[in-house]
Amino acid sequence: MALTDAAPTSLPRSLARWVLGAALIGAGISHLTFARDDFQAQVPAWFPVDDDTVVLVSGVIEIGLGAALLAWARGRVTVGFVVAAFFVAVLPGNIAQYVEGNDAFGLDTDQKRLIRLFFQPVLVAWVLWATAAWRDRPRGR
Image (cartoon, rainbow, N blue to C red; front, side, top):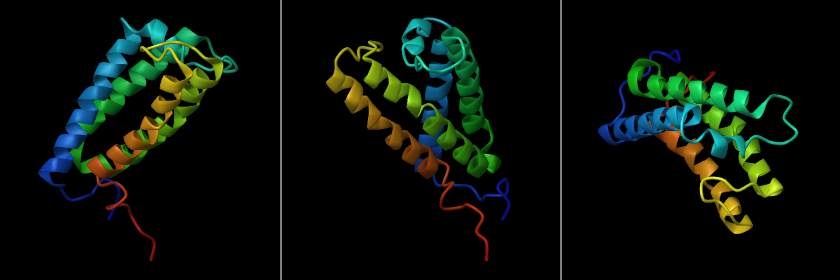
């Protein structure tokens, strides 16, 4: 089975995929508008690209990924792995927010910033479950 030929999933998985897709679109829009400053606080100080550029580009990416989760049911396995990889790729920003002690999104203590780190693996698991990407991945024989 190719990555784009996956069979449909269950209604609970589809609902979870749609909720996550809508959340990503909302987060992406917030990157571009009212939450830009908060998202800039998550860009690591060592990252060699302007904070605002990172926030704007990641916002556009999130909108695209969210739209793909909503609209591309037949390619959900590929989309699931790409979104999971995105969630892993942004983890250094969350770690930087904790290590550097940057306040954003109400995360104004080290304890809150640390607790937030444990939600990233939940997002990875959510997208892999909702898209059934791990279950339906192509397997070599």
